[in-house]
Image (cartoon, rainbow, N blue to C red; front, top):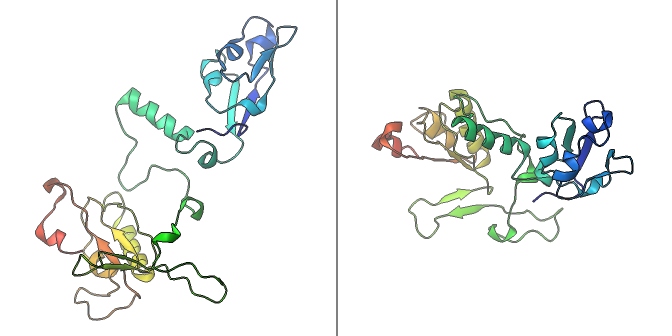
Length: 241
């Protein structure tokens, strides 16, 4: 849901038909459901209430001269999430073309992830948060399958790298994620594109496949994701995790 007052409305008077010929066009006044625009006594369009704009952009879409710009006054992650302009434009593109903007060895773009988008639920931690954050250690360990699995997963922190397959990511990127998982004690996910040869033991913190010498502590985990046989799924692949 959009936040009221989170958008800046700009009207380009050089392009606006009403500015050149008052009374000839009032599309924005008629189309805006929130009363952002109004006509004065001379039938000239004016912006009467900036704070009423919710960023629906109906005015900009229907303006015959493309004279209106609506820009977020703050990050769209705050004001429009999840329906950011990029998401809406992507939906329009898919509807018109039937295609997706995916490409190998790349990403869909978007903002760089940061801690503001990470939510940690305190009740899911292994121990209560410390009363004195300067003297007490906060144990963030999370155990998955402690009472139901032979080899439960013990993550040092409640994070995991999402499924990004080999092919969508390069070999170097996949191995970098495996090493990062080993150094932080969290999980890396193979995705559906197969697994890099060194990835299973790298993720566990080992230098070689014989797993005799551990060089990255505390060691992490590799989750093996599979979908169909078309992706090269085999018994060997499923057993590397």
